[in-house]
Image 1 (spheres, rainbow, N blue to C red):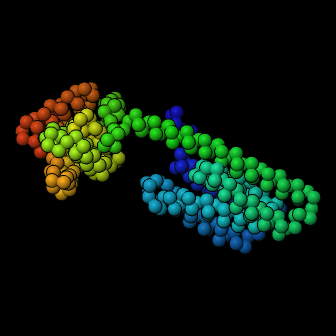
Image 2 (cartoon, rainbow, N blue to C red; image 1 turned 180 degrees about the vertical axis):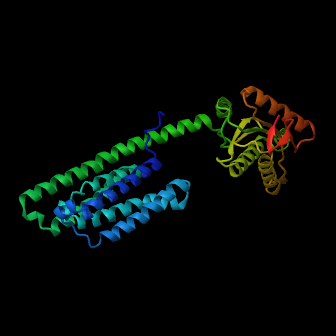
Length: 357
């Protein structure tokens, strides 16, 4: 709840998308509701084209925002490109609604703020300049400079535009810097510096969170086989590289949707998988084992095979974190004692593809 009002890029784009819908809906009665349109008498020749383009673009944006990850190319194109679309639509709307005297002049201020949230002060000034050029074009086109009142209104609009661009850019820069620093500190407190996985502290917090809310999950503890041999034979630097290899493999094949991987300590790792399906757990283990077999660590002496042993325990409702961790740890010990490169599951009976005691 404390981060509910933190303006991330995704939240910024969601708000901007809602504002676009608001202004588009607002324009309908302005152009077509007789009691209003008969008084305003705005141009309607090209508004249907603008309306259709707006509907298509904003619908596509909604799909992208809710269906695609923030790192995807389409997400970046639609979100950053939205500012370009806003500038073009802004100029088009001003053309239809009275130029420099348009009641929609203030929309340019919102576009500047939107740009500031993405590109800070530089973006605010760039889009501020574009808005100023648009405003100046209509002011000169309509010969507003020949009227003292129009000159004063143009001057005030320009001053407010530049003040918002500058001040909004400064505030956005400060807020974004604070947000990035906060994320960096949080990441450092939760991430293992060597493997890039989440650390033991974060693991304990997540197990506690899952058990407290009785969320079904499977806990996997795994250990690199004969890791001491890697260190003794090849040195600790090679040992660190092997740890990195295993960590990067986990990050590649365990998605956020499936669960999380952690460095539990030393050469031991943990997974919290959001499933109790034996098949899904075994498929994940098989995929990772095949990858490590196909792409072993390559040293100056050739390929160094890396294998893992696994202890797997499914959560039982009401179980304490220490209990499920203890069960998985015992199973991991049994897997090591059984010859390594294997996995041991808790005593289960298969019922509807679920791991249960």
